[in-house]
Length: 231
Image (cartoon, rainbow, N blue to C red):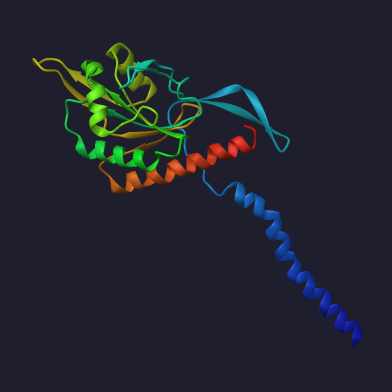
């Protein structure tokens, strides 16, 4: 009887210990994947280099990156990737002469929510070359401060290739009439610190903008995790 009692105790302890062991063993794996990685938009090219995971060689992937630029903001200062180093960017296109109050108000509210979070910056890029002289007043009307929200403008020889080939957005300039018309995408982009597009959002969809707000937080968590891991 005594032997059977000891045997039952051993079985009970083992039964209780195994789930605990599995919990502590698997916890780091669950924690590491708590945030699902966001997609990377644009063309992908398989590189000739490799990295190793658990002894297995895996080809590196070269992802689409938004090229560098140099544009003037509402303060008359030059803005480029160098001035936005290690920043997560929320970007949209604007035309100061067009009424798009819904999108502008949304960006304004979103920027105010991240006012004290220096990791996240906002860019509004004008599609109208004449806005170079108007963005100061436009930004002042919105309360857009350059340290958080840059309103940018420049010549179309710079902005249009950046929009089409870099941001992968649409822009059409109709100059057939006396006053040019600009047809452009109302989408918002989420851009990581490596200048890659990680999210594209429809501004007229509450579900899409809610996803943007969630995915900004996911991208912040990804960045902080990479910094912690030394990547």
